[in-house]
Length: 188
Image (spheres, rainbow, N blue to C red):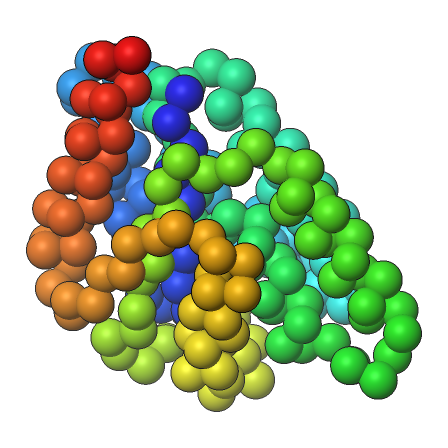
């Protein structure tokens, strides 16, 4: 089982790439699944997250574990470490409850099966309003991108950063990275 996380700020092509990679590898005789971002589903149904960060994180973990149990390769556009970054960005850092939530999310990350490949996508355009993204977070997209890089570096998480603004090139590079890992996995 290969677990691939696509991480980046809003509107960097995570969903497009995750769906495309899952479709591509499904045609290669593999069970390749895409795990969508639960936070988008939650916001679409209930509105803003406001104090639901732990529930959303737990649901994302559940979705990933269910797919991991049946797939050869899993792609997610919302790895749970994004929950940490977004909670830190949107929370009130003077509220001690925020730190309890962040500690809990970090504990979940530490116990969660690691990703075999983390692909970091850099912003190449301004995020667009889509009825789900909050205007506040759209305005903070550069800060989100900065905090994601900070999280990856702080936790010494190996990752590959894709900076090209051409989605076809991003797809090609990501597909090669996954193919290389799948080749190593099959050789063992």
